[in-house]
Image: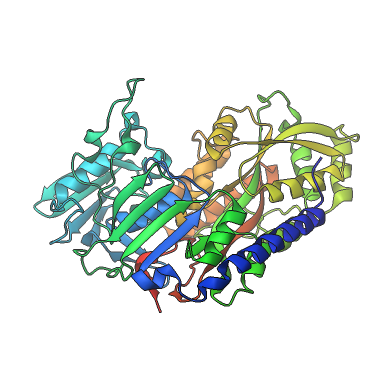
Length: 521
C-alpha cells in the first residue's frame, strides 16, 4: 500500500537531513578549495547511464545534453532570442513546401580531423531515415524523404510532405556525423549492427575522450571549434558521472567530488541551499507528466475502454497538490496534451478538476461504484506515482504499482499490455506541439487511440504552412483528446539544480544545460 503524500515527504526529509548533516561533516575540511575551478573542469551527475552519446541511439535527456556538446546540427535554436541561427549551415531557404536547401559553413572540422562537407550531411540524413537502421527517434525524423548534394557546399533536403516544424527538429534531434560513421559498427552475435557502440565523433564544442560504459563520459574542449552561436567553450574538461543513489550524489556534491546535479527533490534542494558553497535553483522545463490508458482493452482488463472511468480518474487526482509539493513553485497543472510553451498548445480544453465526489459518481454510472483494481506502470519519480495511487484509493480505485525501466514500460504500452501508466515527455525541447501531440496521437506506434478524426486534425496541422490553420487544427485535436480523456495530462515538470556557487551557470526553460556557455567565476 502506498504511503500518503505527507508521510512520504516527511520520511524523505528526515533521510535527506541526515544525509546532508553527514555530508557537511565530510566537507568541512575542504573549505572552498574545490577541484572544479582549480583545474577548469566540471563534473556533472545524474542517475541515468548512457548507452550512446547521440540522440539516434539514446533518447534520454542526458544523452540529448551530451549530444548538444559533442555534435552540431545544421541550425541552432537560440532559446533566449527565440529564433533559429546558422550553425553547420551558413544560410538556408525554402524552395517549395517540400524542399529545403542549406549552404554549409566553411572551415569546419570533425574531432577526428576530417573536413566537414556536403557528403557528411547527406550520409547522416539518409542513414537515419532508413528504417532498417533502427534509430530510436525515427518518429522525429520520418518527415525527411532524402538528402542530396546540389552544389559544392549546398545540400537539398526533400520532405515526404510539408512540415513547418522542420527547423526545430534539425536544430535539436539531428546531429551531423562524418560520412561512413555508423559503417564502423560491429556486428553482434544476433547479426545486428551495434550502432550505439561506435565512438562519438562530431564537430561540436567538446570531443569525447572516454566513454566508460556510459556511466562515465569524459569530454575535452575542442580547441578548433568555430566561432558560431554556441561560442568557444570556456571550461577545459566536462565529465558526466552516473550516480544512482541520491544520498551519494549529495555527499559527492558537498565534498567537491561533483560540481553540478539536477533532478533532485524539493527537500534535497532546500537542504543543499543551506550550504554556503552551493547554489540551488528550481526552474521550469518543457517536460509534462501524464497518465496513458489501454483504450482497446488488450491488457487483461477493459476497464479503461470506458471514458467515464478515465474521467473519474481525472477528477480523483489532486494534480495541483502534487505539482506544488513534489515539483515546486514553477510547476503548473496541465489540461491539454502538450506543454503550454509550445506553439499550438492551448489551455482552452475540457479540464478534470479535483473533485472526488464527481469521480465516485462517474464510477457509479460506469457500474464500478465499489471501485476496481488495476496495474499502474511507472518509471520515474516514484513519489509522484505513489501520490496518484493515494488519491485513487480515496475513491475506491486500487492501483498495483509495477515499476520498470523507461524502455520496458514504453514497450508494454505500445503492445497494449499496460492497463495504465504514469509517464513523462520532454519533447526533446522542441517548441512545437508536433513533438508531443502529433507524436502520440498521429497514428504511430505510441498512439493509444488510433482515432481517425483526431489523426486527420493533427495531419492538417502538421502539414499546413498557414499559422492560423495550424493553431485551429491543433486546438481541435487537443479538445478531442481532452473530451475523450484519451490521456490525462497532469502537470509540468520543474527541475531542481544544485551546483558549485563559483560556477557561472543559468538554467534554461528548455531543460538543456549549456555547459559550453558556462564558466567558472
